[in-house]
Image (cartoon, rainbow, N blue to C red):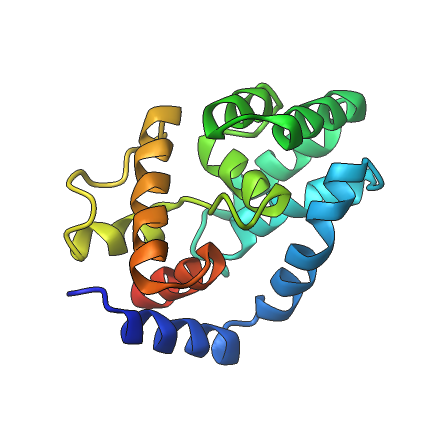
Length: 184
C-alpha cells in the first residue's frame, strides 16, 4: 500500500462518517488541551483518556485487561495524575512528557501517547498496533509493533507521522484517523 495525500484525506473523511467515537474524540480534542494546560479538569477527564485508549478498539482489546488498567488508573492518587499531566504540558519533547506519564499506574508508552495527543494534538499522536501496522504495510516503518513500545520507539513513530503530515499537508489527527481506517 502506498500512502498518498488523497488516500489520507479520503480515509480520514470515512473515519469521521463511520467511526462511532469520532464526535466524542473531536469534542475532547477541542476541550482537553485547554483543560490540561490550565489545570481545570477532574479525575474523570483524565480517566477518560485511559478509557478511550482501550475502548477505541471496540471490543477487540481483551476486556479483563482493559478493566484492570482502567481501575488501576482510577485508583491512582489524583495529585500524582495532575503532576504528571502538568509535566507533560510543560515538556520540551515527547520523551519528557512520556516519562512523567508512564510513572502513573496503568500508563505505558502507548497510553501515555494518548495523553500527549489530548495535551497537544498539534504536536503528538497516539500509537497503537493498528496505526503502527498501517505504517509498516506502507513501508514507513521497518519493524513490527513492539509488545511494549519504548519511548525511543514512540519517538521514531512520531517522527515518521510528522514527516507524513508535512508531506500530505494535514494535521496529526487527520493522519491518525486515516491510519486507523486503513488498518481494518
